[in-house]
Image 1 (tube, rainbow, N blue to C red):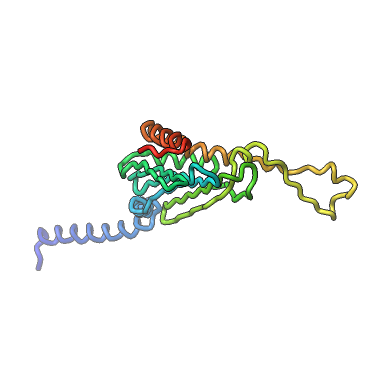
Image 2 (spheres, rainbow, N blue to C red):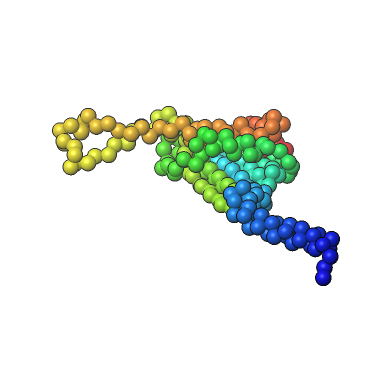
Length: 221
């Protein structure tokens, strides 16, 4: 027979094992426990932001300008490229580094309505064409948009009105009284201005210097 002194420790050990198993099964199904898994998954989820603006000119001296920005897992890089009709091209580049410049900039674009922009037909000054591209990767999902338009100032201020006529509901004699929808949308100008003002002072100053040089037909380095 087992002595009492040897039975008691074994009984305590078995009791602890049983309670541990019960505890794991009980708490594994609780939301708090599941949330820890979600948090861990969130930490490993890919994160990336991209925002580009391409401006193309129909007449010399500048052929095109392009702003390219990206933030991948908190590492930022951005550049500005300008090209003339005579073939000269200069690029200002900020090498990859850890900063919030692009993430803050992307948030500004979102706040100013970049996801709500739609393609617009040529109007206003049609010598300059704008293409905006944005892409976001987060929480194992991604979305992107490409939008083209001309003359953001025109679309922001003097785009006019749009009318829809339903002859089943509208008296032909009252067409002059139609109420239209305003097409002017300041978001186009805001988005272009956001790109134009992007970057630290040294970057913006270099961009401004290059644009001035190219507009005069030069190609400063």
